[in-house]
Image 1: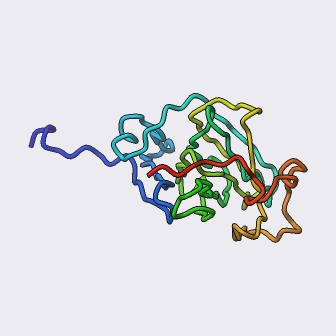
Image 2 (image 1 turned 90 degrees about the vertical axis):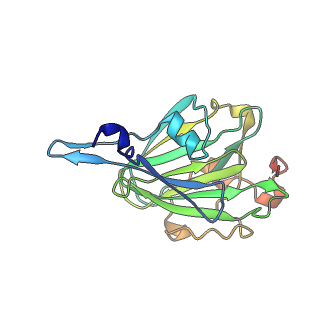
Amino acid sequence: MSDQHLSPPVKYRVVATGLPEVKIITPQRIGDSRGFFSEVWNDRDFAAAGIEADFVQDNHIRNPLRGTLRGLHYQLPPTAQGKLVRVTRGAILDVAVDIRRGSPNFARDAAVLLSAENWQQLWVPVGFAHGYCTLEDDTEVQYKVTDFYSPPHERGIAWDDPALAIRWPIDAEALIISDRDRALPRLAAQPDLFDYVR
């Protein structure tokens, strides 16, 4: 049989979360005695899976301690960011919250375990706030964004907003949170959100 009749290998498995726009992507890993190879981003293949994104910046974060919580963050237009998040060491509970006024899923979250072991990524599109909590010491998180970091457009929502009722995996008293994130407003007090477009 000639190669032209063989099906191309499946490089990514893409699954929607409870929020249809937020997707879990699992890249294929090809391993041998040397280790493994994995193509973690391919513009053409992701577009074919319904994820169209022009990434402009890569971020890499090291979190020394379990229970580090970052979020919930987002940027407003004209520098609103879509994010493709993955973990290369350790594990996190990654959370996306729909903050599009008028959305049928407004204020609902999708929470996904991302780890170096499961090799999954989370696509968080524009219109969603994002945060995570580390589940292991020495966890490293990497993510691509679709626009540049812009302090004037940066916003956030309180991680413990009772209206969101996010089920974080670590007791609140044990969490490591920056003073800035502790001061973020609740969703109802945040005037700067997105509008839902059908």
